Length: 405
Image (cartoon, rainbow, N blue to C red; front, side, top):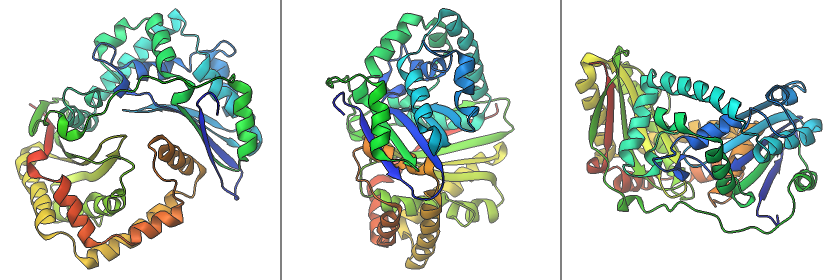
């Protein structure tokens, strides 16, 4: 649009639902050490009242229609979503744009919400799995905002003022930083018309873009870091490697590698660490792709007395992956699994909305689910071996351990 907003929709001919998202290119990566946590705090404040609606009216606005309203803050994005019947699409758009454009940031609400966020921070500290993952990112991206905690620090939250919020809102909640996505029973022209009613026309301007250097230019991560969590009865182990960005075509072999290595009960990690040795109850691998970088990681919880042995078993799996790779038989099996996950996972309007928004944000090609499945089917064992060789160097592996004293 003329003011810089990008609008992307996908019509799903079956069903009555419409999933809508206001995606803002603003997360903890846009912060400094002094205001770390403000993007997440602002997400909370958007639901505390606008110039047109009280907090109670916001809460009832879509639920009274059988719909839902939600939000989340991440490393690079803040997302405000609604799920409604197609006939209530205009009301959902109106509520989303009202909370994003017209927050009150009342002093009394700020003081009250600080208590809520501080409680949330304390709760996160009591969750050793979340702590282990947070510390993993801190050590993968030292001295960089991608390593900041999304919810910030107690000290920062306590000192946030209304003016801090107003300034951050004006700087980052600009139309040209926004992608509006919808999927489901939605007509593109009608959807755009509803957005145009609520945003005054104007020209886009250049906005502050936090620079992302190549991961190789950042300081090396800490190879192994240990943290104490006395309330935990288990050790929580995370490993990770910095990899490529969202738009990289190598994400297709990565999907298969993730699924084979730690994606379910038939994965290497589950079969060889849990089933064979009984060392861990919860374990998985994960992928997080961002604008200029990404993470391939693992998580495992085990008896604290078996920490060293569990880590050794994990390293054996990585060594096996690097030295032997995967067989054609294993690849064929995991392709069938992936095909089902891709098609079933993208049948709902909410997941489809997320997918088209992420592709637009990260300048990736818009690919329909059937084509995604075809590209995954064409992946070879050689491509996966090349992926492992390029990014899973033991010297670049970061490990974090959260365990009792």
